[in-house]
Image 1 (cartoon, each protein chain N blue to C red):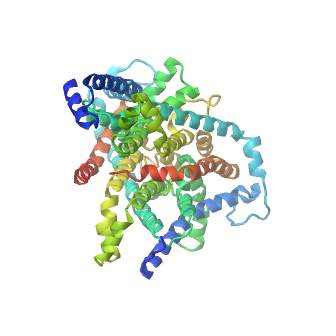
Image 2: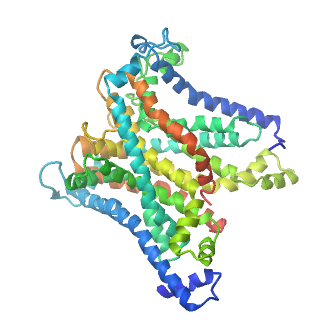
Length: 318
Length: 276
């Protein structure tokens, strides 16, 4: 093992003709630096992440009440969850809530492309305004939307009634059809600036010369997008889609604040369902069973994008 | 910059998009600001201008709800989170970006892969452990808990940035007589200023905004943050005191926005290479 590092490190080294003794001491120093620098990160991740996670798997195999002794259940919790009436309700809510990533991407891409245009004035002010929602805590944004969409005194409900778009006040977050879409829309409104930020940064890094070249070849607006812009931002887009999909699946504060997982289980995305089992019923075994499903759903939803990203990295030669 | 050959169509589409997006972003905030300055009795009717300009809601927020205490807690939570994230993630990220060692890539993915990990799974085990080792209801406990998210995130950003710096920088420094550590400290760190500022900002945001850990790991007498206080007011049953609540959203929402204004130049440079 050590041998292979030596060789690679040697090839990498411009001064490899220097005395072997000096080189050896540099390598020893290198090794110490690697160990000392990696230690805090590694220890931290093992103790705070992987250990509790493994403990979670263990808990999911038990009947594990808040008070009293846990008892072994094997896969019983998993069987119960699959057969529960709320299983598919929760999966459906989770998938709808995940669509938020798509909505965010559409708005973020449009906004980033608009701000990339040379003729737009006051760019940094506009960029700042667009990032407001993301900089604010999600529960703050949630509180604002609870107020605006309140059926009785909310500004939006009021204007919708006034313009005759709706006939009677809708309890947006307590309505069987609306609730899951409303939490999805509010999440989109809250988090799209994150995608916008990364896509815009990536757009701004595209060398102007590439556009000039495309123009020399007579490319129109669309052709320039397809041949220059898209290939340059593809990687960034895959990264933000992966991150936002994962973050959204783990999100519970804002949707829970808005709809509390209800009505019934309508807005109980898997993460909220887990929260309900753990902190409202005190059934930790079931909570972690739901958690394991959440991990599975996360992996399944991310897999295609992770695959595309790997392919992208190979294409750009990394 | 001067050479603008945009077509009229391009301009129309661009401005149309900007107008729609700005409308969707600004109208909600506009109404929140108006509401914050309404007299209490007017908060409950929809109007776009207060009949008289009132600071009653602001007085209640400080006088009745003692919101400044929660804001102070949020500030401390954010600052600690930021410092700790850099301290834990920076050395590791540097090594992953610039040194060769066996199993580097799989090892890196074990760490950064946790980023896509539903970390709400960890709330229960961590709460239990925190109570046992006395970190419950303390700032230290909060700061450490925030790192579960902040560390992998920071590692990912930091490593990407370090990897894009020119090769052989350290060797050049060593030729001038620097040790490995000095090469890191005196050459690499100053070059990494944008990414360090970005990580500080994002980890601060994590601490300032977090609800899940801040709610689970603190009690009403402990380091309760503003985000938790706001959540509690909206979940507080039938009657929500909307006027003061809108003031609270402004008080808790504006500081990170202002910080963002300072950090945005660095953020743009940090993320310019994301995905490459």
